[in-house]
Image (cartoon, rainbow, N blue to C red):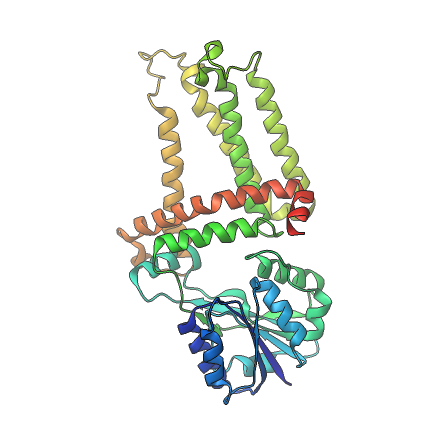
Length: 392
C-alpha cells in the first residue's frame, strides 16, 4: 500500500517543521507528501526544500481555504491511500503503520484521534474550556481509500471552517459500516492560542464560517431560539421602553399577545422543521428552551402581574430581571468551568478550589464571541436559499 499525505499550510513554521520531522520518521514509507501552501511568504517552501532529499514532496503554491486545499491535494494524489494532516497536527511515528493494519476489506476510512496539549498556564485554561484532555475524533490524522473519498464527494469550498465536520458526517451517513476511528491518539496538537484576543478572534471567525455549513444544527437552533425568546420578551414592552406616544419610536396599537404568539409560533415552526432530520439531537434542547421561555416570562412580568408594582408587598422583588440575567450567566460560567472540563477529562482536584472560575469565565466569553455565528447559522437553517447564494 502506498500513501499520499496531504497537508494544507498557512504559516505556523515551527509546528510545520515538527510535522516534517515526524513524517520522515514514519515506519511506513510515504509515497508522496502533497503540501498546498497558502502562506503570504516562501518560508514553508524553503523548509520543504530542506526536506526534499529525505521525502518526496509535491509542493503547490496557491490561495486556498483548508477544504479547497485538500480537494486540490486529492486531485494530485497518485496513491491508492490518502491521509490528511493540518499544519499544526504532529503524527506519531507509527501513525501510518497502525492505519495500514486497520484498513481491510470493510474499513475504508479511519478517522484521526487527536490529543490537544498545553504548555503554558493560559493554554491549559483554553484546553479545559474548549478541547479537553481526552483525545477527540478529527479529520487531521484520517487515512482512507482515495476511491471512497471520491465517492463521498469533495470538501465544501468557500468556507474557512466546519467543512471537515460536514465531510466526516457525510461519510458516516454514506458508508455507516466502512469507517472507524483510531483506538489510541495518533496525533498531537501543540499550538493552542497563547493570548485571549487571538483565540476570541479565531472563535468568532470560525463560527461565522461554520454558519454556512450543515453542522452544529442543534446548537444553532438553540441559540436562535434563545435570541427570539429574548426578543419576544422585549417587544411587548417596547412602547414603555421608548416612552409611549411621546416618542417617535412609538408603535400604535401594538399588543403583547400578538408579538408574543408570533414569535412563539416562529420558534416552534423552526424546531418542527428540524425534527425530521435531527429529532434526537435537539429534543432535549427544545424542552430546555421551552422551560427557559416560561421561567423568563414569569421573571420579566413578576412585579407587574404578581406584585402589581407594590414595592411594599413581600412579593415584590427589586431588580428581578438583573438578578435573573446574572444568574443565567453564573450558571453558564459554572458549567463551562466545572462540568465541561470534568466531562473532557480534567480531574476534580485540578479544577478546585479556584481555577474553575478562570476557566468558566474564559469559556463564557468565548461563547459570546461565537454567538453571532450560531445565530447566523440558525437563520440560515430556516432560509437555506440564502446560504446557497452565499456559497456561490
